[in-house]
Image 1 (cartoon, rainbow, N blue to C red):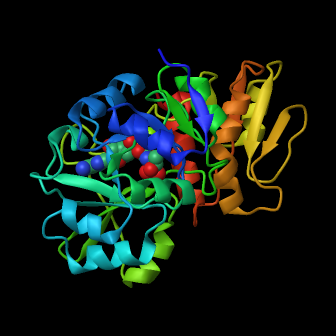
Image 2 (tube, rainbow, N blue to C red; image 1 turned 180 degrees about the vertical axis):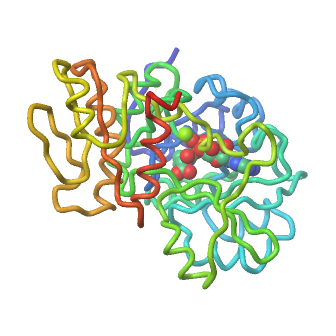
Length: 321
Ligand code: TXA
Ligand code: MG
């Protein structure tokens, strides 16, 4: 047990990391539960603190493109140009792992490693200062809603980690988009903070959907019953669902609209999908505090960050478990 501290001191964070402890770090997407990527025992702590299945690989966080080259082998020109264009930022790229440099546990023994450069001032300073890269899944218990503030992290991991590096609220609010480049094609593994349209505009071609090759999904972002609230959540035609659940205490998560006879939680009154993405996880946590019998969520517009919002709500939905 630790007396978990919250602060802005990157030296404190670095100190605990060097001792092999896991520390929460801010990123522009969600808070990460970081550990030294080169200390296997530290990586095991991430799995045990999160209650994360051991087959679910971690994302490597680095501070520069040079490091991406150091920890991968034979990274293609297209992958590198995507990294140079979108990083630091909410994009992770699956790359051939330099197995001599990155331990198996970091990526569940897979030949590829997901890498990103997070765009948060404090964490970039930490990554520049700390001698090793950091593995960091979202700083929540496995399966629950990802954290977008230090308070969310401490609500879930209080006492289990020594330090939460406080970078305020996450600007993007939804996890990184995960892609993989195979030959000259780009495959999407997880919708996230960079929309498909923006990537397609840059590569001047269509993105393909990655099809998991085993029975097991290749990304846990593809698992159902992820990002799940304790209160049952249903998606779809909200008006009909309100009728169906009449008499119950209902919270509605909408894009911008409000409904009668329910508690309304519009994610962006002005109808902005980036603002909606930023508010999504905090709102899911807020409506999941026990005050409601049921959470209803609208279907969001499918373009831009709406696709990632729909994906997270789909995985949170009760009927899908
Ligand atoms: O925005 C983010 O990416 C956040 C912040 C903290 O950086 N991190 C994050 O990590 O979302 P996590 O562990 O919650 O989700 C990582 C996803 C998982 O679904 C995992 O299965 C997938 O990335 N992943 C990681 N390495 C992979 C690999 N080599 N092949 C396939 N999927 C991989
Ligand atoms: Mg996660």
